[in-house]
Amino acid sequence: MDYVKFRRISMKNHAEFNEKWVQERIADDPSILGLGDLILKDKERIQPRAGRLDLLLQDPDSSRRFEVEIQLGKTDEGHIIRTIEYWDIERKRYPQYDHTAVIVAEDITSRFLNVISLFNGFIPLMAIQLNAIQVSDQVSLVSTTVLDQMTLGLVDEEEEQEKTDRSYWEKRGSKATVGLADDMLEIIKEFNPAFELNYNKFYIGLTHNGQSNNFAIFRPKKSFLRLEVRLKKSDELEEKITETGLDLMDYDSRNGRYRIRLTKNDIKKHNEILKELLVKSSEG
Image 1 (tube, rainbow, N blue to C red):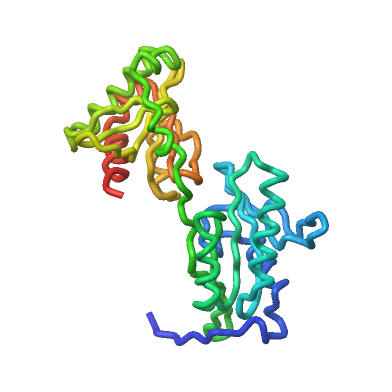
Image 2: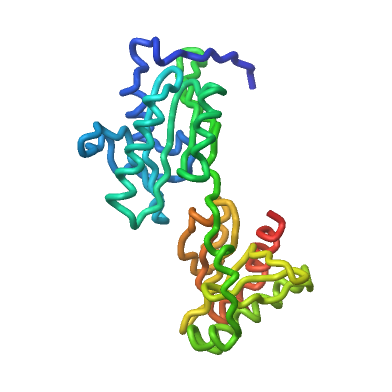
């Protein structure tokens, strides 16, 4: 294999590789941005009294949408204001989705990054640097996530102050599905015996030596148990989960958790993969 030196192209000053060209490339292949296997929902999306959103992308396997604004050259104040404004309009129009604002630019300066960082954690915001690279007579786009979305404060962990007991969940779910939480605890105890169930009003959590540690939480329903395990979103991991036959419901991007529907048979049949997920979550 031969070594070939590449050359970075300034798209802002290029006659052919303009913003429209970049928009079309991303629309044709959203994976360019490194956000996963997304689909194009809309482009040049009209915003009431606020211009047009460059791209609206959606995760086909969850309720997550990305409002993407593209700027060639360096980011500026107008770019971030426009991105946040479009994000705000979309989340108000379609509150059933989890919305993330995405700024795409050739050059995201350190000064501008400091300003953007002030919003992160309050506004789900990402910054992606996108550069055109020429190798011989071919051109490619390379993306780098400069600022990832910060996980917002977890409501679940604030709510755990509202203590309940086992009987509360046996009435809200059933004795059988609360028993499935016991089965999951036994799997956890195989790699760390110090964990116990912690009954709260909105979920059954975990304690480790008396201290809350909710890397996994359980929500008993009438006929099944919903496991919510905190892990980073991964196409490879999702494929592995679904290939085993587990019922992967979706990914809760707000709290960073995979949600899996479990029955008694699932826990017996898929004990090893469930243990693997729980170990990985507890370590992360």
